[in-house]
Length: 191
Image: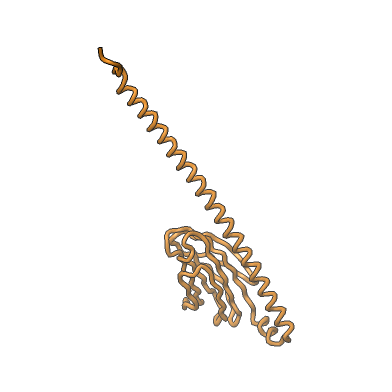
């Protein structure tokens, strides 16, 4: 499955990924722009994930295997469509929350001319944005865990109800068989 995404500012998304499947997103990039991706994976065996970042020439720029979260920065070297791919390495469903952030060349030039106070403000902004993104990821993760917990509770209820039903049927059949076996037999003194 290939999804084309065009980003001009900050974009945070969450999506599900079925076991054994791969999800790729195309990101339109400009030369010398700074690209940053942060991602968090949740679900059963959440570290069984592979992330790859490709250039427009299909050259592998970054790769991570068996990491449930990551934060990568890359300065784009070409104009064109970059690809970010996530692949589940097992058969379990996973929830992927990720954030794309672009800083254009003009913004980089302005950043070089800023004084120390402006640089500190920029760092504070990034820290706050990271906190906000982490809260978003945690909220998504908690919602997914709540859904899984409710599903598990329903399954356990049905399983216990089935076991109780089976025990009742076994008890009733044993009582019936024992009463039939002893019916008509005398256990009193023989005279």
